Amino acid sequence: MRRTPRPFVIATALLTFITASSLASTSHTPAVLRVGTYKGIAGQYSSVQAAVLAAQPGDWVLVGPGDYKEEGFKGMDEASGVLIEKANIHLRGMNRNSVIIDGTKAGTPVCSGRKQNQTFTKDGMNGVVAFKVDGVSIENLTACNYLTGTSGGEGNEIWWNGGDGSGTIGMGRYWGDYITATSTYSNGFANPRGEYGIFVSNAKGPGIIDHSYASNMGDAAYYIGACPDCNAILRRAHGQFSALGFSGTNAGGHLIIERNEFDHNAIGAAPDSQNNDDAPSPNSGRCPNPNEISAAGTNSCSIWRYNFFHDNNNPNVPGLGTGGLAGSAPVGTGIALAGIEYHTLYKNRFENNGSWGVLVTDLPDQEDPPKDVPSQNCNGGISVLPTGAPAIGPLYSGGALCYFQAFGNDVRGNTFVNNGFYKNPGNADIADIGLPHNPGNCFSGNTDPAGLTAYPPAALLQSDLYACNRPNGGDVTLTLLQANCATRGLLFPCPDTPLTHYPPSTLVTLRMSPRQPTMPDPCKGVPANPWCPRNGSTSYGVTGTVATVAGAAWIVLGAALVRRRPLDRRH
Image 1 (cartoon, rainbow, N blue to C red):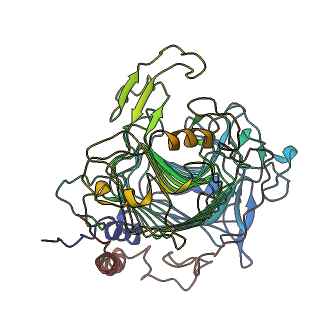
Image 2 (image 1 turned 45 degrees about the horizontal axis):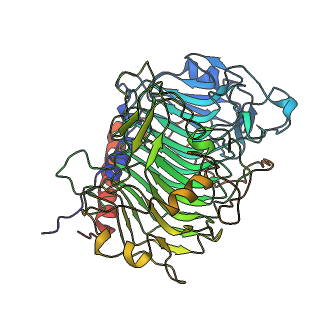
Image 3 (image 1 turned 180 degrees about the vertical axis):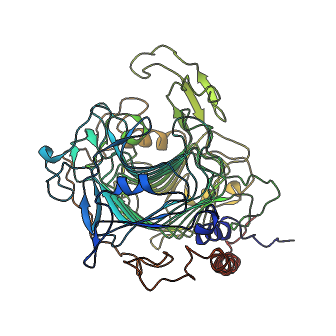
């Protein structure tokens, strides 16, 4: 008997954040700290960081329009423009496009792209960071031009950091809405540059990122990672002009990526497993409760649905060709499921991606696991070579080799138009590269008005041989060769021939992000204050009872939404 999908993370997360203010300490009446000037009324602070330091858990920090050159607060291992280290702080700009947290030097134009206007440091700097604290919301503002150090590290514009690199979860609930992250400067393909736009690591959620835009990053416009059960939703995001539109290392469990757009990146998205400090590996989308039936109608709780991946053919983005998985992103790809398990791709659109719309591939990860994260040692993969293995001729540079297989993934009901137009042998709408596994990957109901192209051939790939929960394997010869060449020789050297030609990287050109929709009512939910004088004692921020009632309404709506739009079940 078919079981009704249960309303899991959406309802939980909505309830959490609608009631965020009521979760703060009941002994403290939330205060509103104002930065800058809004509608001719001056606030108490001129610096965002100063207001954040003065705030207590549950308080609101409102920021008036302005270019805030927040140039570094050393409160953790890395320097940050604005560092939040108290729980339940609500940071909100009064206008998304004119409240700028800016990493460029004081006295320079807003988010200037000129080299002499940048703040260069040896170790790099981050923008707005919530560090190991629950309940922090960041809303309705732009962060720009926080750059990596000269040898890498940092360069993250907006970051919920639950303990990056520690191998442990150090953050619970979080919320981001109407936020923009970008950089207008890059040292070509090298450092310094912006590294990650909107970044979540080592958080167990529930968390939501909504109404956001990120661009011009040397790694990923968006990242959610190091969370075996992420309890996260990324919704209505737009990622552009980056090495990867989305990256999610070792991120699985309850994870919904929906109604987003990824375009003009080298690759639209690349969720992966890695043998690194984003522990623990692998990236598995299986529901943590084996009896749970997700919105996919299966035991897969990591679901990609209703997204638009198009025109991801850009070799001239920061960071490309500089080594590592991001620097070796397979240009011309909508999404690559790289060494991951049990993710569902449902009713997404893939258009004008020159290599592949969808690439499902095993991943031989060439990383020595970190010594300070002893729990990470090729977990979930096959250890082919141990840590410190010597180089093997020109084909292998030495070090560990952990082989992660891609299996259990369900690619179902997606539409494809004009993918694979590079026309190298193996370029297609869909490609499956991998050694046989039980279960393998499954493909069904995918369409292209010109006829679906695939390797293995579409007629085989969408036959019963590739039905779910059956053993199968992909094309590990022709398509593997092309995937290696699309990554500019990640595994072994690739000659540039008419049959293995992908666009070369030539010159990085960055642009300021276009204006984005701002929050319709930046006073919504804020306790009464001179900037929001009509807000009274019934606002969400003051009366926990009202907030809880509103949260209850949202949880009912969330449940209805999930039940109304279940995915087709095919098992």
